[in-house]
Amino acid sequence: MVSNLYAFKRDLNKRGVFFCFSGPVSQDLLVEIGSTLKHKMKLQEAHNLTAIRVFSMVVEQAQNIIHYSAEKCPKDNLLTETNEELSIGIIAVGYEDEHYFVLCGNRICNKDVERLRDKLIKLQKMNRDELKKLYREARKTGPGPGSKGAGLGFIDMAKKASRPLEFNFRKIDEEYSFFSSKTVI
Amino acid sequence: MDNLIIEETKYTPLVRFDSDSHVLEIRGESYPENIFEFYDPVLDWINAYLEEISENQSVIVNIELIYFNSNSSKILMTLFSMLQDAAIQGKKIVIHWYYDEENDISLEHGGEFREELKSLPFHLIQVQERS
Image (tube, chains in turn cyan, green):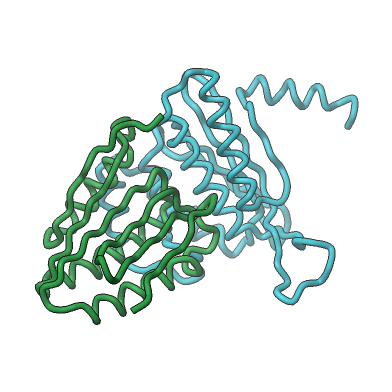
């Protein structure tokens, strides 16, 4: 890995990635990413609004990892009563073709793939007005079963993005697949 | 009833509900990990407060959120719906949605809420940029 690290970094640079994290994703990490982004964007003189837009994509995607990743690790080495866990995933932020983008990935159970894929395909086909309308309706009704939030995350991202969401499911084994998504601001 | 004061944290807003002055404030950022854990007590307080106040009580609600995630948006909608129901019953509830002059996103969000809450007085108020 030591001798390959340069190649790995160079590969990230080539893809326009200026921030990359792979490991346990936590709320505190979100705060750190937020600070890094604001600092980076200030340096590039990007409008503050862009920083908020990019940050909002990072939050939605990272919180999806926190809530839904099928890969976990214990919060600390001691066995706690609450048995708290951290979710594992990968997040990357980059700049390409004059747009910022956010990539994220995490393991999910195969049984959840179909439902998620159908939902995302539907969103990909909608225009901005349709997404706004869907967002409003979804916000009024309750979250779906198995949802840890409002069920609005992907709709919100699709609505804020400058291009349709990109996503990919890659089967790992009989139980799990790897889900990755990209949003462009 | 007791006032509700929740201090601001890195990812949750300041909540300051004053049942004597009838001014309810939410300010800061909102993206808690567990949305229900943070907001259930807030909604419970509002519920109890709305039942307690008199028929035509005036209430001012000041909201100034720089950023809030999609979960928070749903909770805000729930909160505003509760306030709208009270307004329909005769209580004089007014929402002040503050946004930074450079923050188009916040202005847009405020506008979207206002459009959906036709029976609730909802004002979009620009704040001068702070240094």
